[in-house]
Length: 116
Length: 257
Image (tube, rainbow over all chains, first blue to last red; front, top):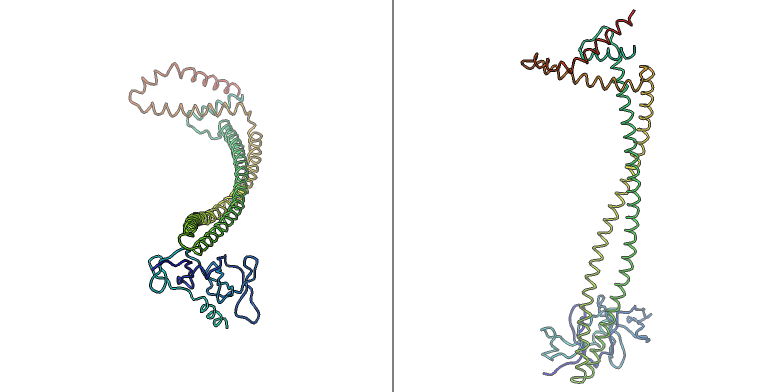
């Protein structure tokens, strides 16, 4: 089946797979600033302002991704593992279970709906 | 004349008889000796309480030092917690770096990025162990904080009790000083009232003690069978005593009008 390169993140307590080509970097959870008129927030990450979507409240990390050609931060997630993972039915294998990929675009839309 | 009166008192003790107007010779001497003993005991008690006061003061300063030591422990603990927090922050950063390195390795693909992924995993495993050790340190510090709080309470309680003891000892010393003064006054008045020469009084009291012991021993001897022969054996010892008593009797008779 081959391997999938990327990372396993925990989103709202559930593990999800993020392909390496989608992820830019991982950071400690920064302070967020509200963006007036927008459900998104913004954060100062590695010398740049990054729009941030809240996916959870407890995760210690911010994962900076590329979604539809835009840089966006996923806030409130926890990175569990990085590297190569065996591909399986509907995702990759991690710690004896199949982990489904995280649909970043869908998550951002969901975050926008929740905030609205 | 005075010696005669004193020996007369001795004779009363030996005979166990009480004359219609008892001579105060022996009783005065015993009273004098008792008041002297009381005065001496009061002085001894005062000295002991002064020593106890000094010990309490020393204990108080030791407890003050213990309180300072506990405060020092507080500040050391704060410093240690600051270092622990810095170490935790550094480990978090190492873990993040390892995650990013693993991500970079994954991006490079297999096999080019495999070594980087493995090294990143290794670093994360070490960081996780170090973090676990830090958690144990933090738990130990939490327990030490609780123990230290308890210790501070106990030391402060001991400090308060020592202060109470020191105050009680001061009150005791004041009372003992009063007792010593009162007993010195009693001794002086006893001396004045009885007109007793201290040295003679001591000798009379001592002689009275011996006389009482002699009477008790002779009474016990008299109760034994064949007591006459036993008494006879004491003749050479008791003879001079009896002779002395007789002479004193004679002297007193000569002196009396």
